[in-house]
Length: 176
Image 1 (cartoon, one colour):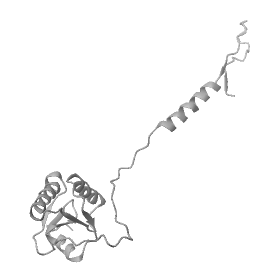
Image 2 (cartoon, helix red, strand yellow):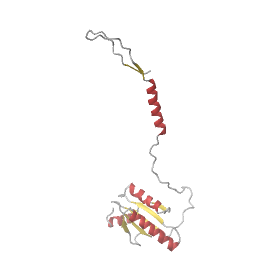
Image 3 (cartoon, one colour):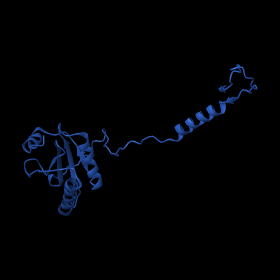
Image 4 (tube, one colour):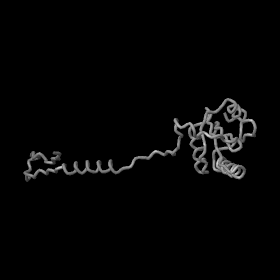
């Protein structure tokens, strides 16, 4: 039981006769109980930060019949470089001219939308995007590309390892 005693002690000072005061006792048990009730209430009702995660549907490792060939004409490769720059091309490396762009709305999103429409008009099928992060790119770059793919509704994509000829492309354009 918690209590606070505020009695004056009753000593005589200066020879004056004083009336004896009643000691004041404050019972703090109710306040302690209330404090623990409030702490418990806020602990149980507070929501913690929810993780910001994108749902990714990964193929089963055991299911080997789901691989289908994809034409190079509807494949867009995105090479992630340094300094928040990326390089993209359609088809196979070396057969089409790569272009260096940024990750913004006017860069990657615009290219993804244009190429998606172009592939849909020429082949009638959807665009397949291959994302290849390099050693010089950062995790934020991969998240930005996944966000742009989600915004432009390109759900057919893969994240694979970059090859040495593609690293040479990045070095040639000074984004490695």
